[in-house]
Image (cartoon, rainbow, N blue to C red; front, side, top):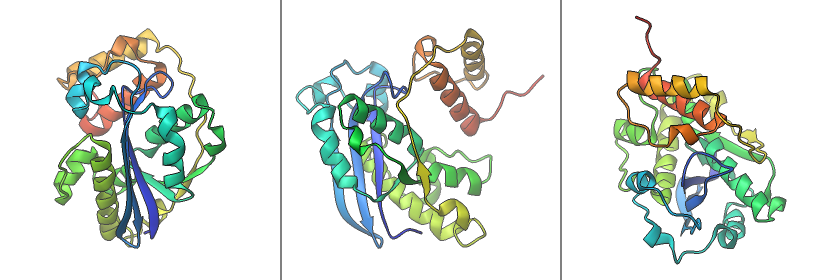
Length: 242
């Protein structure tokens, strides 16, 4: 277990780091198990927030219309993070959004390789396959209080508690290697249109598991569809042939 790190979480208007926007940033700084700092900002994306994202996060367009734009908070946030190891639940998602925003705002000097630890990756490798690896479900499983799920600061804090719990249970049971920080390098995304066959498969997978999509599937990129398919299979399993 690393002794000094920052846990981050972003809430966004969708899944695409290229097209969608950050609407909330949350982070907690931990040193020797003690909370030493927090960062929390709502961000004005300069677009309307969809009903689905409002439903998921509770963040409305009215809440953020007078908030700073992303370019006004990014430098401050990156200075808060500094050279710390960065932890997150599906950390590549958050880093991808950060990198795209940094490039768009002319702050590419902050784009580098980041030392990261992904609690989702740890959970996938340590916890049995039939168990949901969603952050909210893992919090229930381990008795971690999750007051405001899908709010950035709350999710950053509970991810910190999840990391502690996973270390406590699994780090000394032959799984130590996956707890080591990994260097993550992300480049700005250039999304491609999703092939019709890929979209068809996603729709069939949703129907098979009797799920309602959180997003407009027909407007999703190839990368977004792939990520969404992986998420569904991880949480609900593959379609079984009849």
